[in-house]
Image 1 (tube, rainbow, N blue to C red):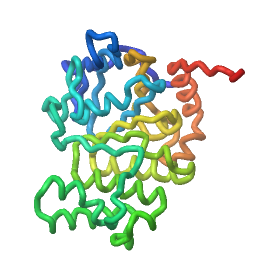
Image 2: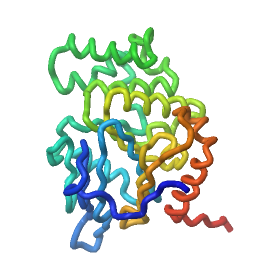
Image 3: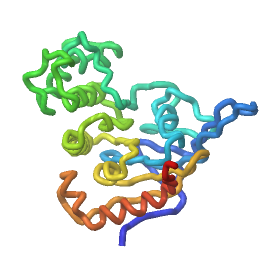
Length: 274
């Protein structure tokens, strides 16, 4: 049987982790006719080297939750704790990788990777050395001086990921970073990003609409309900295949079991067009 859990999510009082969300709620325009409750009482924890995937129906507040974790929004209730400190404003402990790479077209690969370090300030030579080490370690050696227009989509996303890693955050937020890529490139990058997160002892949260991607990348998959969203279930992913190859993982019998259960939990109604 697949090891799934529909119990209440972990609480700060009983679970330790590099990131702990405890009872996070978000309401926009409270007390007005335009009040919208995005989600209520979202709680979970995240350990070093762990990847948590979050899936849910469109409009359930996944991006809003990411903005709260990154310190870009204040929650209406609850808190997010990263490395023992309550998140209040952008503090550099959380790195954010978006759907689009947002590379600056006039800057080279090297200059794009160092961009965040330049904004933060500090020793320029050290920033350059950090960026060069990442570029050479993770598959773009020889492209240090290339402009984004000469790179493939997958290469551009690698640069964006290196730019995030260069800041050495405790937690990396991955907001559908593979959605614009072709299927083959997507599978390769999923495996690479997963391997890098583990090897560098980072914690990561992946938001995705792709259930297969969530299962193949994550240690746990958290399913949100329709808005106002709550945590509907948490599935610990334990496949019977040792390989982390995304294609091989999809051959696991458990992969299909997880897929069916998560799809059922999402409770998405597909209506035929008239």
